Image 1 (cartoon, rainbow, N blue to C red):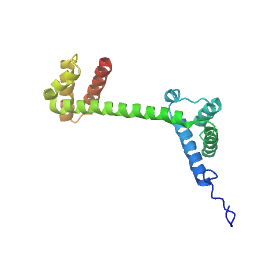
Image 2: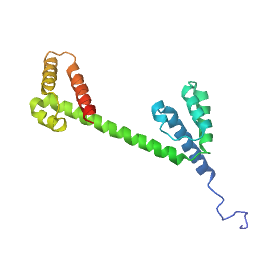
Image 3: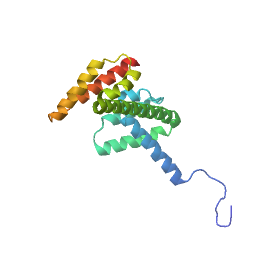
Image 4: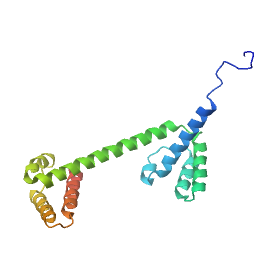
Length: 171
């Protein structure tokens, strides 16, 4: 200690650092409450009281009550290891990004088919050799007719659904 009573040794994290950590845990808990039930099942939550608190927070609609419940979840999160939960959320985020990218690839393929017609068919045949060419051509012609007659473009949606079915059957 020096003359003013200050101790140069580390006493632990500062009050601000502790508050930032608690806020981060509360935000992590809030994110858990927003997950769909199917995804929440894949998150390793070992504390049963924490899981129950998350399920309760999902049902609370009042702002003040939800805020207090989220604070309670943050408090319960202090007693758990958040690294396992963060890892599981990162895996879910990666899967989501992968699904979005796959969805965009199918959309791009559909757009090329609609705008290039038979010129884009060889690319489709490479990806899906068992594709029904007649169905593809019919949907492309329907799209062009809908566009010409200023009708709703339902053929584009049907083509996308067909490509998605082909893709899921191919996997």
